[in-house]
Length: 581
Image (cartoon, rainbow, N blue to C red; front, side, top):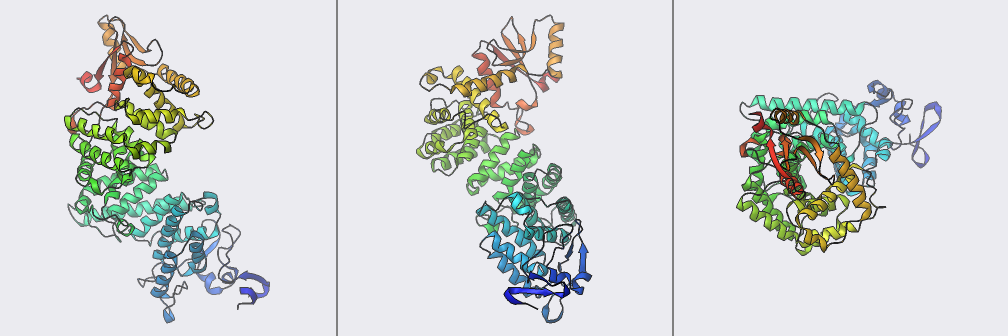
């Protein structure tokens, strides 16, 4: 019974523990439940051994549906204290209304024996939501060593066969948001089985309705579930899991697109209901880009048309992810879709809807595509005018080093040297110090090279503008120039280049392979000195990959031609497929 100060005496051992609230650490030599319960014969009979060697009670996963575990007298679960359906509902209310992570985990600590699958999934989901609000809790060390989180880990692992599709998705998504991996092998076991179950359920959804996909959030994963899972596995850098799921999404999505509802997704409840909403497409394309996995022309083009028709319904972050994905995967959306993107981006930029990172990412992404069509040139002009408005110029002050590099290089490729935006961003770049930017991380090195590329373009294309700008900081100029020259010198000779070189040798044409210009800044694939011509052997990476628009060269080809031209060399592109013919 309960003793003084809320403690209970357990048997002849004379040990005192806090009743219902104290638990021992999850350790191979420690039991995972209060000592008073360890002394209970009924508990010992229902205990199961976990992978770490400790013992824990298996809660009643299926009490609500009347499966194993069942409901005992007076509505009390045989294996928990949830009090039947009413008890589960009460636990869920306490979880949902928890003001912070500590309060939520206190509910888990006292009620874990009576929690069912819905309670466990809700607890993980709510924990992730609270951690997004209060980032101080999202600490890997803190979470790993918190016994209450470890209770949730064990419950998730034990219920992995019992969760429905939506709840299983919510747990995996929450782990990604929390940047949390289970301690020991349990995490791998859970994630592996979660993926297997989702894939099996989706395959059933395809087979049960011929030529279509049977949508049932409990038995088959919805569009939003698949999208969230792909985002989660990609975020957790589980490439194999994400790759398998990506293939499944490509197969299923064409059937689900018919249920696209652009009006939904404004509220959290709607996004979590499983509907095919703007966030679904955004998460998908973002993940494909991170994985460097092109989903195929059909999938990309279907998404592109759907986005263009409903572009007003996409949030700034979603629109940024989408445009960035088109850029990373070298998929030209087509002039019509590109125009719809740029018109909407310009409208929102003027209103100040994009944060600093989104804005710089969009500028860089849009600059990668050619604007040969009159309509796309007009929409690009709208974007450039929007960059010179007050709210956009004010956001330049919030650019970090990578944002600054993205914005400068993007504006340079667009030819916006004379814009107020380029000038202000250049001045902002000059304000970074060597102490603040160590040029040690991959992102900082990449940013330095992009800024130096912008500097070279500025010198080549707009030397008069350069006269009115401050000099590039000496520390940045020296470091970036050194790495740029080293990159130019370390070019590798491809089989394509060797083949072209052999043909030129057979024709008696003097040439040199992989040489740099006299200033060391530009590398040339094959240089013909008598003609001052550089033959650039351009493989697929120099062109947009989608077949429906033909072979569209990326804008960086024109950038290369401009930089070589400023050095007296005429660049001639040799596309790989034309050479093969």
